[in-house]
Image (cartoon, rainbow, N blue to C red):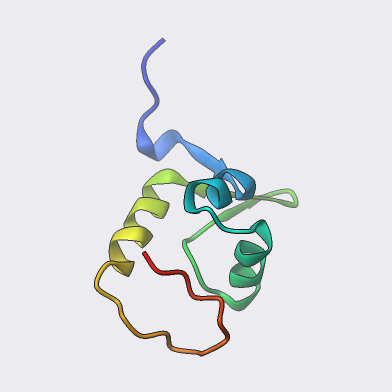
Amino acid sequence: MSPPIANNVWLTRVELADRWQLPVGTLNQWASKGRGPKYALFGRHARYRLSDVIAWENEQLGKTDCPDDDNDAVPV
């Protein structure tokens, strides 16, 4: 079996929360506010493509201010 390619790897919200050491509720909140990385819904289940997560992480590097001060920003 060939190794998975980043474009073919999908993370659950729990897996992404583990990756970033965040509560799942933070990702739920971000999604409801249109923040965070892109995700797709498969039925009622949110999935994040690993390549989109990595791209979003890279965009966050160098950002020092938070556009809205609701105390759910995560330092990267």
